[in-house]
Image (cartoon, rainbow, N blue to C red):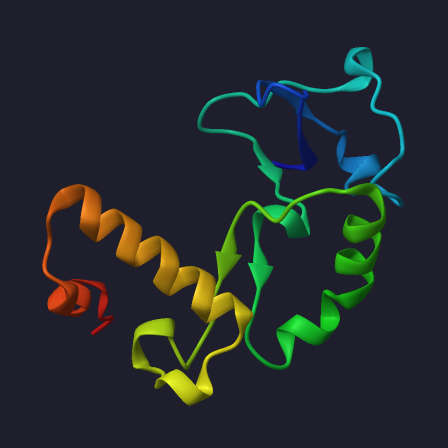
Length: 129
């Protein structure tokens, strides 16, 4: 059963899901009453993720997210997960083709490689078949 958006508190703890009737919030700043949230049942239910947890950063998807991003900017929110549906993938783009999202991806990649002492050319491990 598909429930509504997953809701977390300020510390990042999972509180539950909105009901299927409430599926998504009409506003990022709308209050969430913890008493009105449902806990998903294992192997039966799943919560939806809002756009901040599945921001699709390729064309034409990114254009669809602009109203969400504008509201997110006004309230000082953050994107938690960027997603590259289809092609091109970040590791397939040259320097001149990269957007701010690919630059963040490469910055994270470089930081992780430094922490793990992995050579820079290890990007091949990220290649999709």
